[in-house]
Image 1 (cartoon, rainbow, N blue to C red):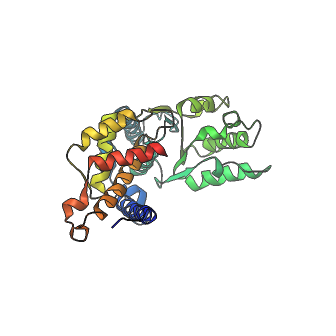
Image 2: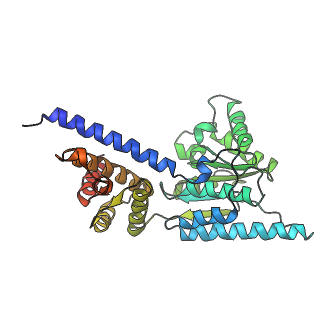
Length: 323
């Protein structure tokens, strides 16, 4: 019997969508405790948070700078307890890196760390972008920026793609982004003991952003660069995504993944870990289609249901390349 192309296409779409949803649910269930912790839950210890940071694939230089920052703050607190002179320093940070290099994940852990050592009261993370900071008429922008800051008091305000606040980076000429930056600088000073601001984005555009206002760069204590993941690290990330979603990568898939990542176009827009996640989710969808075509699909065992093959990965890579 010949299957009609439209029915086959629908079957592929339906199977892919079902597996994609299942994969997302499984992955979301395993997000760090910080991302899904209830307000009344017991906060994690510094050791637990540090262990999660250490477990992240790659990012060794980033981890070292975070360790240095936390060590300084902990010793600073002990010096204060002994009545020693306090060194007044800014804790605001700049994260520079391409998409999918872990900036948001590290910011979440950092916020939790600040809360754990008592530097910030809540240790929560508030994520905003240009839309959450810049208004569309006179007087609106200052209010929006102030609202974002107030929401983040006691924690970290994470401004993703912060360069978009700079009009010249957006090709907008004079717009209200400048007002947002000026308001942000004032609020950072007003609430210096209640708030940490982390601005993040592409390295080149962030460099322009920091130069867009004479007083901006001096407000930040550190500029941390998040490097792109190498091929081996992307393989490790894909393997972890599979494990966390109750899948396993079959025989020969490591070599297949290395070839896929070696051939991926490493432009500035390359997704890094996001590309790895998209690849995994597409591969899970292709596996579902492959298994659904098996005459014994109604009685498949756990090994078959959990194993992603090299062909699943190659088919997924082709789909991503086409997109």
